[in-house]
Length: 258
Image (tube, rainbow, N blue to C red; front, side, top):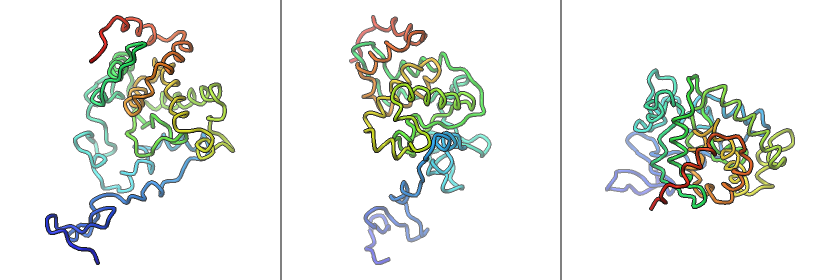
């Protein structure tokens, strides 16, 4: 191969990844993988991409149709060989769309005592649905979310409604963030910083917690800094009839986590 053999591992190191000469295979994916995946240029394409089984081509594990459980049999199971499911989601029974993201850590907001773990608990108690499921990008790619992020299983009808509600929200919150003809993800990301698009998504989830707490739990687990006082204050002013925000009042007297 023109590379020196590592005698400790019997592998060849190429700088970006290791090569196993016995199997003639790399031990990890091509670091240029992300550049192989096309962007969605319209809202219809973005919605279609998020609706593909197991993330379709946008879940890089699917580039090999022979992989088992996204190459992660600890996190996923596959009861019938068709699609991997998160172990915690299956164990959740009626709340099958909720994964156990508490392990990602508790994030504390001085203002409202809202934590990721409490959002997860709220989702488990209030979201009841049955399949079929589709996989959702909690941070949409057209706003700058990575295609490799962990996807959230959401019932098909509610998933489509989430996209409709998000487009309506973005149209009112900042029209320039709403995807459409002439306003592709590339265009949106050229006008808005990642911090601005994350803030928009945080506020969308905070004011729509009753409907999409499971997706919110995933988003805030990945972006704990978005449970900021500024975002929470904004959401409290705009979530007038939300049951979630009524329950928040009962959390105010709880002790501050260490």
